[in-house]
Image 1 (cartoon, rainbow, N blue to C red):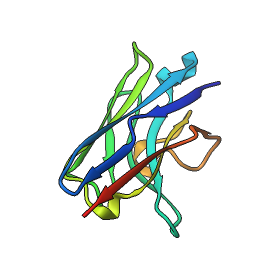
Image 2: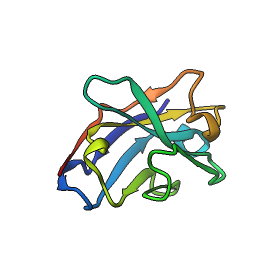
Image 3: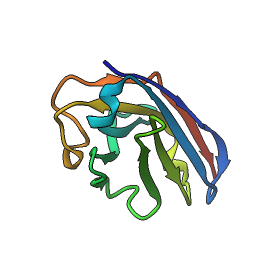
Image 4: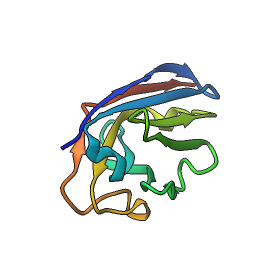
Length: 124
């Protein structure tokens, strides 16, 4: 079982950067597919970045080239570096962990552990 705690959200102006962290508790993290999802006001949840235990990554077109996902298995932390943030990136960001899933589908389709989320607000 994995427990996830996100941090690093905040308010920035367009063009700014933020780095989100997700602390993972539990050895199952090391072999799990990990992902960042977001939910913007009035919209559904969107998978934006994912990484397999072997380091293979996948990104949504909306963030490709601006966001970078990485993981530190030894330290039990997932990261999301977000550059050139835009107002449309405003959302609650959630960390997710799912065993036996794949990054190319943002770790979806099976039992998933979610964090409580961290808010990112980008002003124009």
